[in-house]
Length: 248
Length: 289
Image (cartoon, rainbow over all chains, first blue to last red; front, side):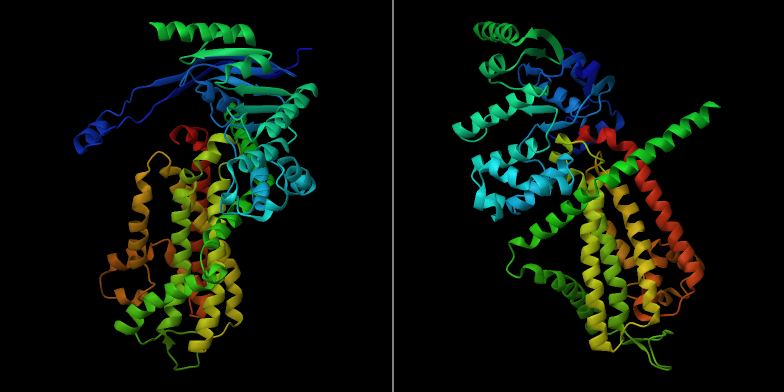
């Protein structure tokens, strides 16, 4: 089976960061005269093809364009060039607890986070008990979220993200949620998703996790695809390159 | 079919899809607004009481300065709420302009911050971005509706001016005003994304706007200052809206037909300009956050 879940072609993203480390009047006047700022190519002609039922890892150094690529797939960033097609219901866990308001109760935040992710209120009503149970929150649910431990917070956020019942899950460095028991539970949730022919795209610096969990991986360097293939091979190649760089 | 009509057909379809998408996410806008409202007073001692206290304090401050110190006394206006020969107390005049103005002011400050303060949400999730200024608008609208209640209680008890048949005009007036504020807040929200300086400018702009509008003084104050000044003063887009409020709050006679027309024209114009320029710009917003 090789039905595509995510297909991207020639994705290019350029940023024009406003560089003003020490904004002085003279410099800012100068900037107004010639507005051209140095262009930064975050993604350079990246092709991407991820199949249904596949766990796909993205590795690379800081600033290589990993998160930018995930944002393009999540459609929060429109690429300058290229196309991206995503087939399925996507749940994005690029950061945990997006849409949460720490001053409000856990209950309220389940609704806020769920609605932000695209659920309807009725759907959240139906799934509410499951979400709380899955997050192991129980009677803390009516306390303000700012009083939660970081583990509780992450569990709730992950639980709300999974309540989408996504076909496609985009994860950025968030696998390390909660204690060992919850980590196992979340790993199981992701395996279940893969068994149901779901797709996971996963950005991480935890290389053993990528090698073990993902079928295939992509190594990004300076916005370009350095290699793409079975995750163990890509991770090995990446590791070797990093060590060689260090010894220089 | 000529290519232009194909393109415009596509644009119409895109606009329709956008609005459908927006409508399907209405619960999100509502929860976002209510969440912010709840959170704002969650850690205060007086909690929900601030709802009533805010407009009371706002009115008190200006009444202290312009009602007591400058002593405006009563105003010679024709009002359906007054007996013949009776004059309108300054308090009723002040509050019937101040509360609506404050609604516009909070809409603008809420709108100008709505994108930047939700950067995290924007970076992570895709949804029609217009949700954010709309949620901010709901927040200020809820505040305004409480102040409407405060107006009738305070002005009723203090000045003996109670709602009458003219008060029925309050509903259409508020609807026009909401559209007007929606336009303004989306315009400033869109501009503030690349041009953050607007955040700092808006408070000064709204203060100037307050002083240039007939709120702390009557429009007749400018009579004899020259035709140019008077015309310019009346071109203030808030002018017809304030007139409508003066009528629906305190029964002050106005030329209802023409005032209504001008107010609607401003509101629809601003809303269309605001929404289209905002939506066109949406795809680029993520780059500035």
